[in-house]
Amino acid sequence: MEPERLDPIEKAAELSVLRGVGFATLAIGCACLGLAAYPELALAVAAGSSLLMAAVLELKARLAPTRPYKRTEAWLLLDPRPRLPPPVAQRLVGAALERHFRRYARRALEAAIGFWMIGLALRFLT
Image (cartoon, rainbow, N blue to C red; front, side):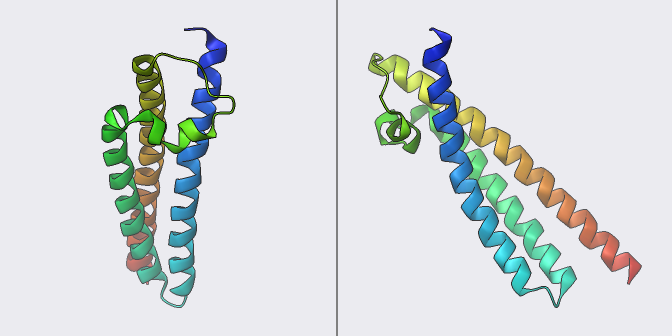
């Protein structure tokens, strides 16, 4: 494949995944802000929610290669859509989505561990 054909698919896949992760992060942030009076609880909610987001993203990464590419947001974001044979498009879009889902799942897991560690330190210091 030519590199210029892969670039728009990668960008669309990242934008698609990042949009969903952004909304989930906003929801987690709002929940933690609502619990600001209870910092230990807010950190526990942030850790649990981030861990849940990581699990969902990992599940989506595992399902991405087999999900019909024409029904993905990444494919719909492509304008103009590349003229690729369906098996090639399925492989490229599925692989790009899988990579980005996994990348953000790893970041969500790191955030969950960070929130958990901060909450643990806060418990020991108070």
